[in-house]
Image (cartoon, rainbow, N blue to C red):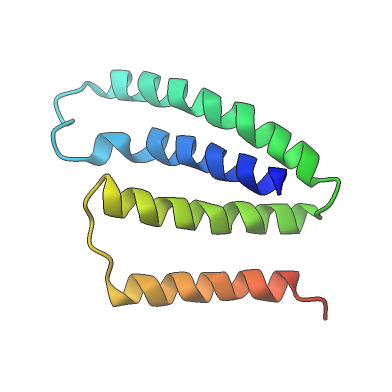
Length: 111
């Protein structure tokens, strides 16, 4: 569970680092400042992601860890895009994400 918590927190930081500046109103900030600010935010992501993967490797395979990370990333992004960016959620986004979450099932199913 700690792995998933750390992955979730790290994805929050990375999503912010990648997308905070895409919201209307930030166009005036020079690109070099956006990059510097984003790298500063991403530092916290790495401080959480590395321990998450080290601890997770005790229980999950690398494929499973990456799958968890991608699933968490999608959930964090959906919330961020909806709440912070104010983006609407269309049916095709939902279907596409549902198909991606189907991949999580396939990877974790013990065949």
